[in-house]
Image 1 (cartoon, helix red, strand yellow):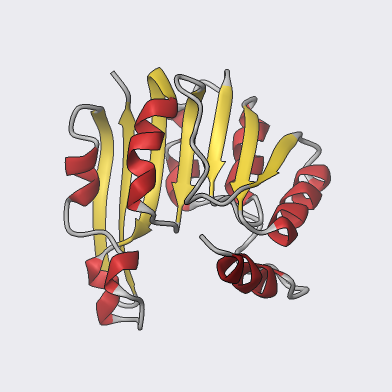
Image 2: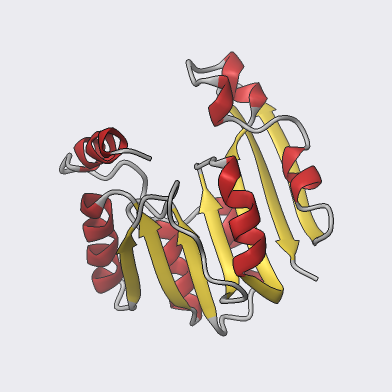
Length: 186
């Protein structure tokens, strides 16, 4: 990501209203029974922190990564409002290697940077859980997204084929097109 990306996201997040709801992703809450609430969690491209705050409410020690310090400020405010603790870290995700075997849970919602797939694999501890959900090619029918910003069909299954796939879905229902995976590192 570049300074231009940071400025773009800071501008979007500077609006008084939130870009996303305060409630966590339905995919995350519907499958929270798979989570132990113990250990460290990483929320990649955390934005305003709705999923970070939810993971913290389950007991995880959460690091929220995003390029926008404005978004991270909103995430911290939400954490304070919900009386949970998160650590926010502003990072250029194109140039931020992740530590090895560090996290028990990795969250990534509505963000795609394929160069991060090996970093996600590396940073999850054995037995760690990945929740990943983002737009797929079906979304191109309903939006003006660029093709490089969406997953191919079954791409997450291929990328994490040596993980234990706990849940997977692809949705194509106007106006939505996305893929969701929950996978455990073996």
